[in-house]
Image (tube, rainbow, N blue to C red; front, side):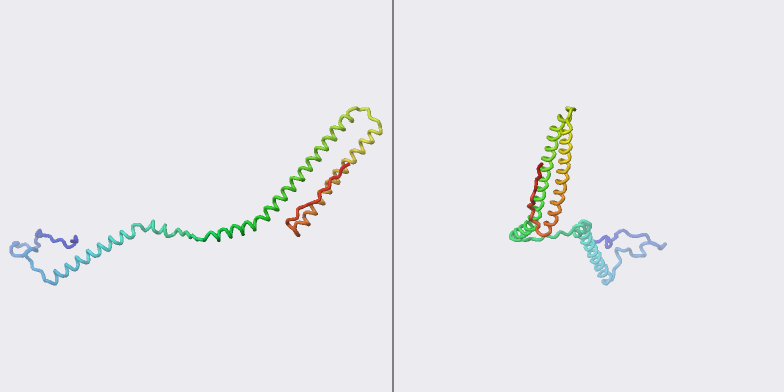
Length: 192
C-alpha cells in the first residue's frame, strides 16, 4: 500500500466552535463510489511509479561502469594458420636480402680492419728495426741515405694504400646500385 493512501483513523480537530457530535468525523463519513475508485486508481498509479523508479534506479546505477566498458573497443581478427605462415614467409623474403647485405658489409669492414691492423703491426716492426740503427749514432752517409729512402718508400706506400682504399670505396659505391648482392672486391696488397 502506498504511503499516500494510508487512512488516518484519528479524528481531526474541528475548525468549528460547536460540539463535535453535531458533525460527523471522517470515519462515519460516506464517500462517493467514484471518489473511492479514484483513490484506488491513484494508489495503483503511485505503486506503478514507485516500481518504475526502482526499475530505473536498478538499471542506471551501473551506468558509469557500463559507459566505460562501452568506450573501450577491442577488435580481434581471427585468421587461419596458413595465412600466418604465408605472411611469415613474405616477411622473411622481404627482410632476408637486406640482412644478408648487412652481414656482407660487416664482413668487409672486418677485413678492412684486419688489414689495417696488419699494416700497423708492420709499421711497428719497421720502427723497432730502425730504432736500434738510428740509436747507434755513428752512421755513414750511405746508411743515412738508405734510411731516408726507406722513409720515403714507407710514405709512398701509405699514400698508395690510402688511394687504393678510396678507389675501392668508389668501386663499391658504383657496384652497389646495380647489383646489391655483389660484394666481392679485389683487394691488392702492395709490398715493398
